[in-house]
Length: 289
Ligand SMILES: NC(=O)c1ccc[n+]([C@@H]2O[C@H](COP(=O)([O-])OP(=O)(O)OC[C@H]3O[C@@H](n4cnc5c(N)ncnc54)[C@H](OP(=O)(O)O)[C@@H]3O)[C@@H](O)[C@H]2O)c1
Image (cartoon, rainbow, N blue to C red; front, side, top):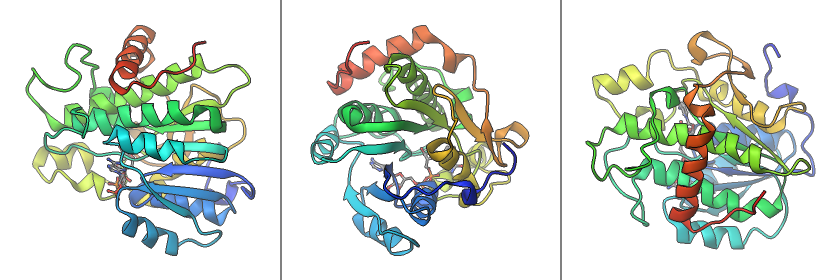
């Protein structure tokens, strides 16, 4: 699996991809590469003008730009109801990174609410229409994360933006792996991916020294960061329950390969508890089994 680039994407003509957060950064790169491979892409974002600007930049079939606010379950439900056609690949990419404390429309802490609970709800509501695979985007910083089952929303503990982000990115992995365990053998695959470190807007939110250390260093261009996401979404032979990340040192940069993630991300007891909490918080119940 060496030096894989988007030229390795087989023709995606006739296949539909739904990319959350396609208006910026990695999502925009993923949208461009998929359109160039002939895919039909539904690009979701909050700010449709930004989405349309990305749509205007693609080479290939123009993506459909749709509004979806993952920080508002009403928006997620409304959006999911209007997805009439089957989706081959759902890419759960949108995310906020190390933002100051705030809550979503439903009162969830912003990182866990947007990055995990919004995608948990979206995936559950679309599951009967997804044919091939679900890719959920995590981060190497999941290693700093703990799932605070007793205080998921930082109501009682001191808020630390990077730890809140890390909790949500650990939740992304726990979700991707648990989903694979729950899906039927003839159902879609659930795969995790992470980009390493890429110079996007999201990555520049925290300009403090700590922020620069945690997010920065030698960030690779967004097009490189998008490679693991694209590989996870299109390569034949990707295994359900795996994580695709960059092959460089500390998984910070490089070309896509199957990578290891923390022991905590593979903890099935924590995953089961998080699943219950997520169903309760969102009101979205997945089919049993
Ligand atoms: N860049 C990195 O180094 C890095 C490292 C590890 C993991 N990641 C992960 O990669 C993913 C993409 O991040 P990025 O670096 O490309 O950041 P980005 O440039 O800031 O893009 C984030 C995208 O998410 C969307 N978004 C944010 N909040 C949303 C909400 N409430 N509802 C719907 N969409 C929302 C944004 O849409 P709007 O245009 O509407 O704001 C934007 O399109 C994230 O999951 C992030 O955690 C990135």
